Every structure is written in C-alpha cells, then in structure tokens.
Image (tube, rainbow, N blue to C red; front, side):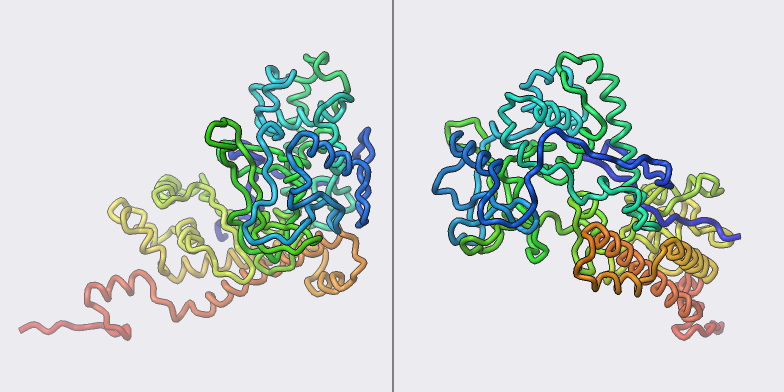
Length: 488
C-alpha cells in the first residue's frame, strides 16, 4: 500500500495574528443556523442620489469634529456595493483623499481608554475591539453611535451563510475553513463571556450574544486595516467605506500612517487614490493582490473572475510513523520547511518550487533511503530538486493523482454545470460565490492532475540519481552507454 503523502485540505488560518489557530471541522450539518438579531435598523443597500439620514448625520458629525470639510475631495455615498466614497472633484493618481487623526480610530488604544479597558487588557486585540464595538453599539450616548449606525448588520461573507447556503460549498476547502472560523469565534465568545462579560455585568449592562460577537467579528474581518505601522488592528471611520476594484493592480500608495505635524504627537491615517478618478465617480483601491477567491469570500463576501484568484492548498506532512521521520524533519527544517507544509496552487501558474522536492522527501524510502544519511545532509535538497528514482517519482505521481480524483469526487456538480449556472445574470449573490469557488477549485485540481499525469508519461525518459552519479564518475556517457576504460 502506498503511504499517505498528504491531504488536500485547507491550512489553519489566523485572525488577526499568527498565534490564533483556526481548526476546521469536518461537517456542518450539526451546527445550528446562525441567526442575526440587532437593535438598530440598517441602511438600505440601494443606489440613490439622496444619501440616507444615517449617512448624512455621520458626514455632518465628521465635519463638526473637523475631520473633513467642505473642501474634502471625497464624500460618502450610496454605490452598487452599498456604501462607498464618491469623488467630489477630479482626483489625480496618488492624490490624498482622506486624512483621519488617530483620535477617531477604533483600536486597542480606544479600548484601553474606555471603561472596559482594564478588563480587556489581556485579551486578543480583535476580541477586545469586538467587545468595544458591541458595547458602544448598545450605548445611547456613545460618541461612536453615528458611525456604528451606518455599519451593515452582515455581509455576504461565508461566516454569515445559512446551512442551506453552505451546502452549495460541498467539497470545497472554503467550507471547512468557514466552519473552522465559526467554531473558533464561538469558542472565543464562550471564553470571553465566562471570563469577562458575566463577571463584569456592570460594564456590560446589555446582554451580549453570540450573534453580536459574530457581527463584530464580521465588521473587523471586512473593514479593519491590519498592515499599518504600529497597529495590529484598527477601524478607521469613513476610510473604511473605500471599496475594492479588481481592475486596480497595485497596492502601492493606497494608505499610510504619518505624523500630524512637526510639533504634534498625533498620527494621521492617510488614504490615497491609486488611480485617477473623475468627479462623481467612486474612489476605489485594491484590497489585497495575494488573496485567493476563497479568502475574498471569507473576508469580504465577494469573488473575482480572474483565474489567478482561484487556488487550492495542498497540505503535505511527514508522518511520525515514518521510520525516517527524524532525518526527514531535520532536512525539511534545514530548508525552511517543517513537519507539515502548505502549498498554494494557483490556476494558470507553475507549481511552487519547493513542492516537488518536499514530495520526493516525504516519499523517500526503500533503496533510496541512503540519501537520508548524514553524509548527504548538506546536498540532499539539491538531489531532491531532480528525480531520485523511478519508484519515488512514480509514487508521488500516483498518490497526487489519486488524491486529486478523490477531492474532485467530493463536489456535487461538474465544472460544466457550474459554468452554466454562472451564465444566469439573476443568480443570487451568495450562490454566485459558491459556484465560482467550487468551479475554481475543481479547475485547479484538474490542473494539478494534468501536471502529474504528464510527469507519469515521462517516467521512462527521466534521468534519475544513480544515472547522474555514474555520469559524474565518468562511468556512463551522455547517451547512457557504459564507458570501459582501457588499461596499458
């Protein structure tokens, strides 16, 4: 029986720091449907020339506070995505459109300065900010009320999907990741409820539910800026209305944190337009060029049609039961990898450079195991860059192809059926995401299968370690012929 080289599954994800592990669980049928109930009525999402009252109040509040003025180059408005930033005049490429001072940021500093700062001091950054958002949302006298009033109750992020909607993701890695995220958020809520909320009811007079916690998580996941100097996680009112454009292919110059002035300790969040924009058009940015469609769907609730957004994660693992586990782990770690390695395969792009060598390492055994000896330790990765033996190469091809076929059998539709559904212009937005995700994953799996099918067909033509070694010793010619040395 061939050893199990890897599993086709999603890697553990983190939010927002790498210390938080999300463990996906295998099924979703036992989880209750998430229902969302909130006190405040959301802004209706429809394009209109007249902004709704909540948005007008928010804009007036920003003017009253001196954050913006009549000369500001952008204003909030209703757009096809919901809320967005509209250019009031022609805007040049890289022109600053907003500067928000740090006293209007919602981050750990804002939490620390609030009444719940002391009890939240030891929490994960996102958990403390989430509690702050929820508490402020329920307070009638909150200074943040006018901002919180314009936030959506939910998005099309997969964490808010019903069981019926999640069923459309059957077989996908996004499904297991989504369920892992939901389990993680639920566990974090139960923990913070027991340790912070219930023991401090005087600080949290309104009951906080799991639904409230999911709302805050969704807001932070979709709206927070997390790659800022000295900031782990921060919400920037008004700036967070900026929407994404797939047509913008640069993240440069979109935003930065800078000093407010020579004699000021204050900081400013500066937002620039990465492209030129005409008056009354929407100002847009690129959220993240490196995110896959699955990540976009999880974080923001949308996907793109670009092929390079479709990805599939191969998870490879050196089994602890492998008789050469210690040696293989040492080699992997020496070359920047570990016991478990994740490789993102992107549609239309070559395989990650380290994937094949790692596969060969994991499959190494039998008569090839001599390469694991210490004498080869400094050179083995170079050997693994090339075919080791026919048996090793044949094994990795067979196992990869079998795994691809197994993964493809887990979807309940074909690519052709998915593409037919995508032709429907009236397709529900969440169903459109599900169809796009599963079609994309299947295309990547087919691509992987085709690559290793091609390698299988070339097994007889490949040059393996022993042949290369004999050539190096001058015992075999370039055409494979044995060289006989004459003696005088």
